[in-house]
Length: 119
Image (cartoon, rainbow, N blue to C red; front, side, top):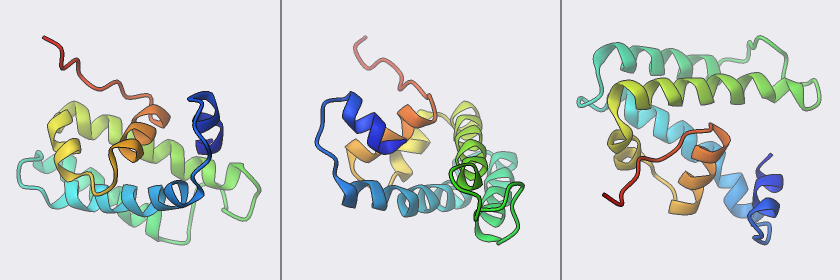
């Protein structure tokens, strides 16, 4: 999915940046889960997501090609949307450990539109 996204944007494929997104997203979720500015209920949901992602038990087993990892990606996107709705976009930006391009990719994949800064 990330490869397709980079191709659509007219960029060369940066495999290192793509490989770095997974760990960056996990670090983002962990940081949001311990951020006291994030509402407590949202932090609990993020902790539950981390447990789900780290446990070997999934809704769809990971050994199935393509769809095995789709459940993780979909659940993560839903959780990020939930976190932004309740904690605000600033919390996401403040806790993002990666590059600006990486954040843009994650937002695009999760279909999250950044707030307009031109006001």
